Image (cartoon, rainbow, N blue to C red; front, side, top):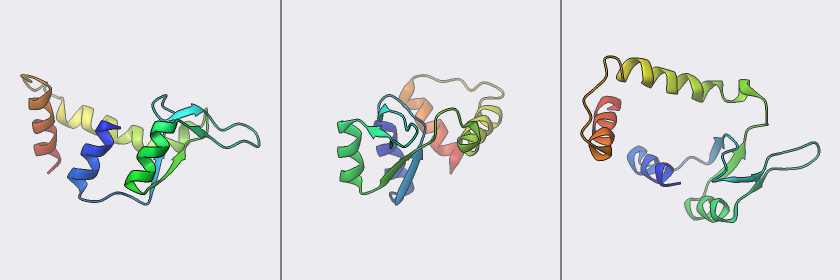
Length: 101
């Protein structure tokens, strides 16, 4: 959730809907047949505070996550090749933000 807060601040807005994988920080139980996803209480409060509607991907549906996975690959191959010299986590964040701008 800390990463999402940073992302919202950097973007300057919060999306109306946020599609996410079934990560344990947000999802207690993934959607099943005839059942909706059950989100953690903390993530429900987080979504309510920031005013977005969380939408969980269906389990075992890689096509729903492909767009995000492609972005991870883009960053990996275009930013980490050749490997940057990173001093600490704060320095890494600064490098990533500078590169994205």
